[in-house]
Length: 114
Image (tube, rainbow, N blue to C red):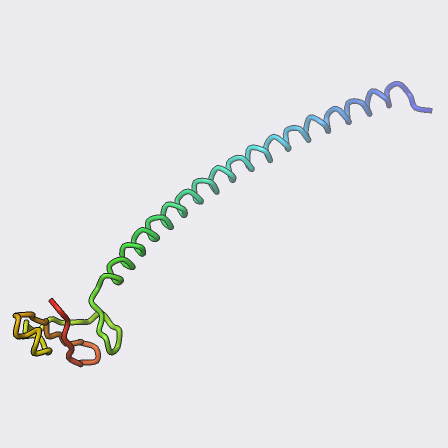
């Protein structure tokens, strides 16, 4: 048979354990909150860096899309040499000019209308 003192001792142990468990749970909760806040800050920094990199790459892409390309190799290393009369004599007769260009990559020359 369980004595009154044993029942009181059991009650104290159970109550003490719940109190300790509550303290541990509060510590775990605070630690989790801090870790979540730190992860959210890191996430925000990564997202900002990705937006910056995306903007930089979009600007670079727009620049490359507008760059003069060699009709032979497709590279953007085109150098304008000088303006010359149009290669079609009919256009040349009315004063139409062309730009003589040279690709720095394949070194082929080509003309483009100006």
